[in-house]
Length: 192
Image (cartoon, rainbow, N blue to C red):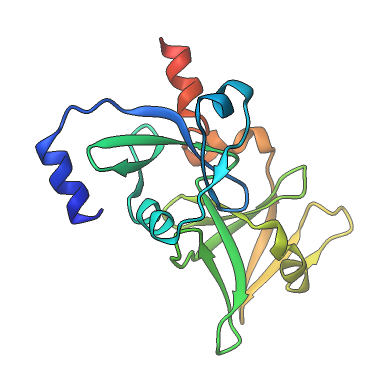
C-alpha cells in the first residue's frame, strides 16, 4: 500500500466504503462504473490512464471476508469481479521458460490448473489465489498442454519436469472454492 494511502487512512479512518464503482474484467482491465453503468449492469469505462492503473494495482488487496478492494486514500472501493480476482498473461521469459504475470505486473507461480465448462483456464498458486488466463493466451497455453480425449483432463507442461494436471471445475464453484466474493455490491444489498 502506498504511503500516501496509509497517511490518508490515519487522518480519516471512518470514511464509508463504496461498492459498484470499480470492476475488474476478464481481461484484467480496471473499469470505472458510474451510476448509469451500475443501473444498466454495464461493465463501465476502461481506465486508460497509466498512473491511475498503477495506483489501483499497487493498492489492490482483500479483506478477511474475501472481498477485493482498491484502497483509494481513506476510502475502500470494493471491486466487482467479472470472474476471478486475478487475470494472468502467459509469455516466455528471455531464457525460454514460461511465465505468468498478473494484471498488477507481478509474477504468478501456479501449483494447480483448472478448466471450467466454458473452456476458461484457471491457475491457482500456493497462497490459495486463483487467476483466469487471459483469453488471448489460450493458443500459447494449448502449445504447452496435452489434453486427453475427453477434453476435460490432461496436463500443462509448465517447466521442465513440472507438469500441472488439468482439473475440471464448475464455473459456479470457483468463488467458493477459492474464498473470494465476486460481487461485494450484491453481498451488501443482500445483507441490508
